[in-house]
Length: 337
Ligand code: TRP
Image 1 (cartoon, helix red, strand yellow):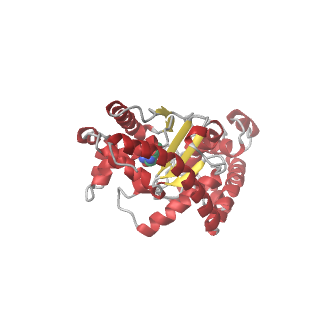
Image 2 (cartoon, helix red, strand yellow; image 1 turned 180 degrees about the vertical axis):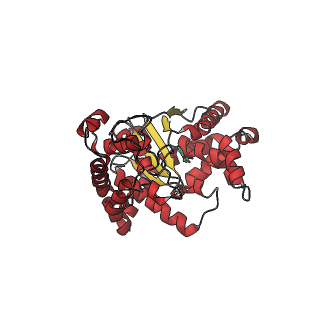
Image 3 (cartoon, helix red, strand yellow; image 1 turned 90 degrees about the vertical axis):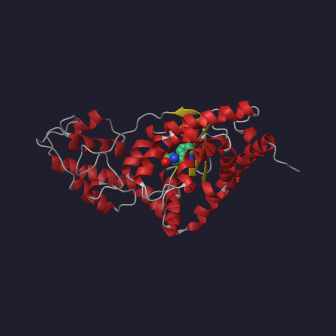
């Protein structure tokens, strides 16, 4: 069915992700499984934010590859293109167009206060460009184009959502009611997966030690070897506790992979050593990730299906975005025939 603004009955959620590399099992546990569940309850728009990506230096071939890989991974993980809209930001010029209009009401002072801009300006001091400064306004355009009710955001993006709300209110006040004022959606906290090598640190895709991180593209053997080599704690008890960060992390992984409760897992391994437990966790995680990886590879190796999904996503998104933009253009006084 074609999506129209008037026919949307559920609250609208929009979320974006910058295509910045292969996802890990930490992303899956922390956020993405939540998104998969949100699809039932909300009208969801998931966007690959390639316009945002170029605010820092990118290798064009890499960006192109990662954009498609990120989209494929989202589908593999369970974003269902039949019920949600998955699209690539640059496919909709409306995002850039609305940014320009919002730029005209955004203050240089308020953009200057964005802590992410300050942090990234330091991190990329050789390339502090105007797009990096404008990043939060583009994000506001993403959100406001779809008349979003809710935006799932992490700590680091909260200030950008606050700016979005201010810009929406300012526009509505200055012209007339146009944008819905979005609220932050704080998802239930997912499990936090720690590094397999230093279990008091969060698992990270950019850890220089490759055996610390399970990537969603890792083969069965890579997964199993990483888990078998995971750092464990002294003692021999399989117990979830603060003084056992290594074993606790493996229990969390087992819980993620099998849906068994923590206490149930502990009970299963009373009097069994670390060796048996690790082998079981390795098998469980490999079994859990296998269908995701297989679906991912299928999409990456047969681009046509991926192209069809993203084209349909683009068309759905455009119907909503174009309507909002048309309203905005009219209100600010652009001539329309
Ligand atoms: N800036 C977000 C991030 O880095 C990604 C993003 C772009 C986004 N546009 C968005 C998130 C709109 C939520 C809503 O995580």
